[in-house]
Image 1: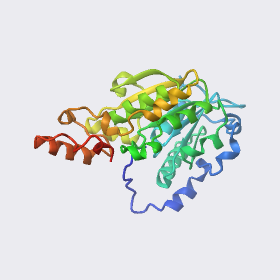
Image 2: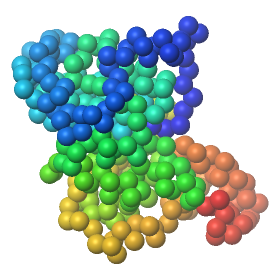
Image 3: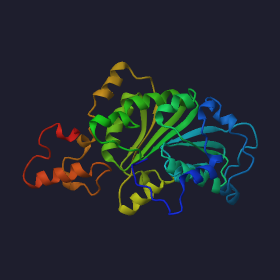
Image 4: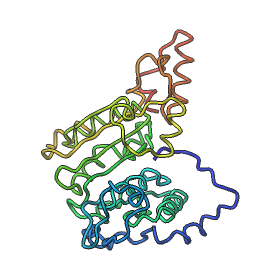
Length: 300
């Protein structure tokens, strides 16, 4: 999730919160590799949302979940819990490394009495140790940290290496969905999805309008209030990429500044982490100079 400062109430004690909502936190997720759908079922009590909506699908009485979904970088859990509430036949797992986010997400799960959601305090590098090949029906990447500078491109959750790692864990026809307020990150991600051998179901300059019905994260709600657009990609693995395709992903421009529009004055919203670059570039342009002193400056 995007790098944001998380405000906590004065009486917030992290350790106490983590202990209070420990039932919704799986601290040893590796032991469930390959058995998530069965190990976390049966779910005999429908969610509160299902009880209030007779038309909603009932939770399974016993056996196994129909599917397992991962919200990678789940933040405070608003999206995770909304998905779990409306789809009790599936298991929703949220993964994050920020303890405060883990505490809030677990609190949402417990307070909403959801029996089909858990939070895993792990990073993307742990995925292969937590999930077996083909175990996931989908991965969502909601507003991941963009890491705009070239030297940090390896940390992006949508670089070709991460996307290759996801492929092995995805069931047939499973989808990876990216939503971001960063148009440069979305455009960069297109090159990476293609290099990693994914078919693009859709790309969007306005996910909220073109693909309504998605639950929102808290971050997205704030974006909407600012009038910011939400960009997106939805893709599924296709034929395995060749070494040449993978190399093309590595060779693609890695500085997100290179994916900004040429007319920086046209930007109504500056993507997260690129504020300094845009301000400096606009100042140079106002003085009749090039946006950057040289072609490499954007990557620094």
